[in-house]
Length: 210
Ligand code: AP5
Image (cartoon, rainbow, N blue to C red; front, side, top):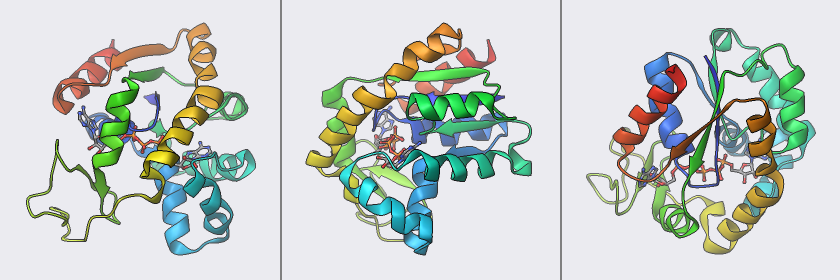
């Protein structure tokens, strides 16, 4: 099954994509995680992307499209995938549509109000291996330390309030037009992204299997 998870920053795309990917046996492909890994590794791509990411702006299309195209051509993605954070604008969506793996089954649209987004992102902490917590809703057992690998938890640089406001504006300007793009293709399933995580996972599974 080939799915796109679409929604504003902090809507829970990553949280749900990990769970749903596990259930469906397909890889979770997050362009944000891939870019952050490149930044940490100090690759050429990471060096070109980092300033855009820290400002909450989109990384240039040519860089992201090349990275994503390689990833979805990998063997583990042959039977399907969940795209989290891609496409982010109409240019990216059109390239995906014409690529060999571009036949998408469903686009899961996460609906969450803006106050909740700012609250969620403000409380988000993560470890370098991608395990994510929320200081109030889903705190680690030992404060500041990842339950899974014992690494120190950190706040993402782009999770400061000013940058989050810009990320929301970028979402409205660049990414929201994708809702009508995919709606016209009959692919959108809308999911209420607030409430217990397990309940949202069940709703997504029900919707994509329908
Ligand atoms: P990216 O990493 O994709 O960030 P994002 O889309 O802004 O999404 P987030 O990771 O902030 O949120 P999420 O929806 O995954 O929420 P999460 O599950 O973590 O992109 C980062 C940057 O990379 C971009 O700004 C851009 O620069 C660049 N980039 C990436 N892709 C690109 C592309 N295609 N083109 C160009 N540039 C690109 O949840 C958030 C918090 O809420 C967590 O603390 C979580 O624990 C909590 N939470 C989750 N679900 C619930 C719930 N049901 N109830 C309460 N709390 C919850």
